[in-house]
View 1 (cartoon, rainbow, N blue to C red):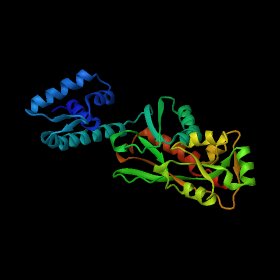
View 2 (view 1 turned 90 degrees about the vertical axis):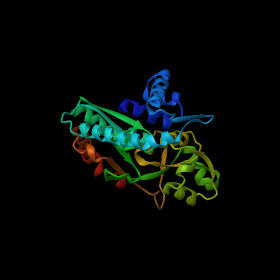
View 3 (view 1 turned 30 degrees about the vertical axis):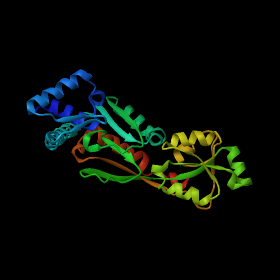
View 4 (view 1 turned 60 degrees about the vertical axis):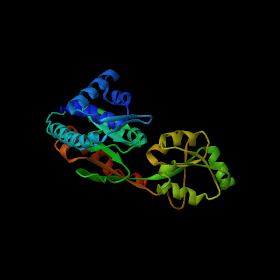
Length: 289
């Protein structure tokens, strides 16, 4: 079984249909169908069952799955090692981070990177999802929770201060009657975040007005007067029209972690970007402003 066929088999298994596999791999639907049929002919038995819920593995397909994933891991390891041994400061550097962090914290680092190393092309994957670094979904990731995956080199980059923000109208309403203002919060999946608990504890009678996984969206709704929001200070302070509200105890700060797969530790463009991030962000006294 060739690696190209293994990729198709895994894409169909994970996508649950020929169409989804075609979309993920960027090839045509008929091509996926032909390759699956060729695989089943080679195996001498069906690898997938067609159901109303999509394509499911047969027992034979289950047996192939473990071998396919082993081949995938070997191929990805080779890819990472080849990328990590590149000595030239050129090529794409895939960076995963939240949208607000990329736009309001990391942007100066990437700008300086492009000035110093114009042949390096930063590619920012702005999402709250935690991407899989072992599969090279990204070369490096910045996030607010430590990495738990094996083979990830990580460190705490900086502490991010948060502040309480509102529009001028919301701030006036808060001073007149704290229970009258709305609260802008993370959605249910992020309801455990410490800033959510802080805001709910401070305004126990206020209504939940809006939730979003995006801090940038929260800031825009806050500006429109929908309610109070706890925002990372680089974002909140940069939005014209938002007022940061002094409180006796500030919202909880969060550590920012940076991580990459150990196979990429010799990638020069990654190391150059991390050196810049250390120089420009690690010691920035945001919390003391």
